[in-house]
Length: 219
Image (cartoon, rainbow, N blue to C red):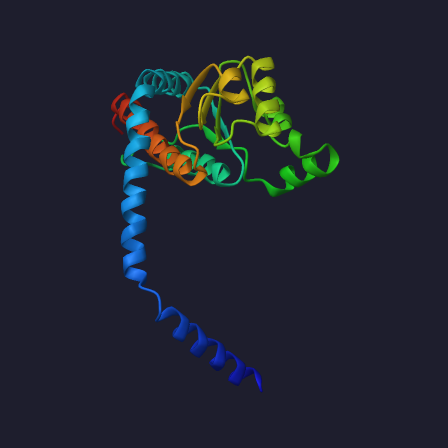
C-alpha cells in the first residue's frame, strides 16, 4: 500500500471510530463539570480578597516609585508570567505609558546557559541576583509551590531586599510560607489552578493599570 492509500485508510478508520461517539454530549458533560469546578474555585478566591488588595497596592507603589516587577514560573506558569508582563508593558485596557515588568522566562540563551553551567534550579535565582534591586518586586506563579528554582529565587529576592509575592495553589506549600504575600487557589487540579491564575492576572493588571493611568499627566 502506498503512502496516499495508507493516509486515506487512516482517515476512513478514524471517521468510522468517531461516528460511534456522541462528542456533543461529551462536550456538554465536560462543560457542566468544568462550570461546577470553576464556581467552587471562584468561591475560594473570595477568601483571598485581603491579600489581593495588598498585592495591588504593592504593585502600584512599586511601579509608581520607579522600581521593577520581575515575574517567574515554570511551564504553564511561565506562560502566565509572560502574560502578566505583556499586559503591563504593552497595555491591558487603557492607553498609557508602559510599566517596568520583566518576565525572567523568555531569554533562552540565559536560561540554557545557567541550566547547563549551574543546574535548572538556578535559572531564576541568578537572574534575580543580576537584576533585582531593593524595592523591586518578585512575583512568582507556581501551581505546586514546590519547584526548587522558584524557591531559590525567593531566597535570592529576600537577599536583594525585594518584595516577594506568590500566586500559587493551596497554602500548604513551601512557596506560600516563604513569600511575603500569597494568593492561594484551593484546588487540586492543576488546570483549574492555572485558569484561576489567569483571572488573578487580569484582576491585578486591570486595577494596577486603572490606578496608574489615572495619575498620568495628559500628553
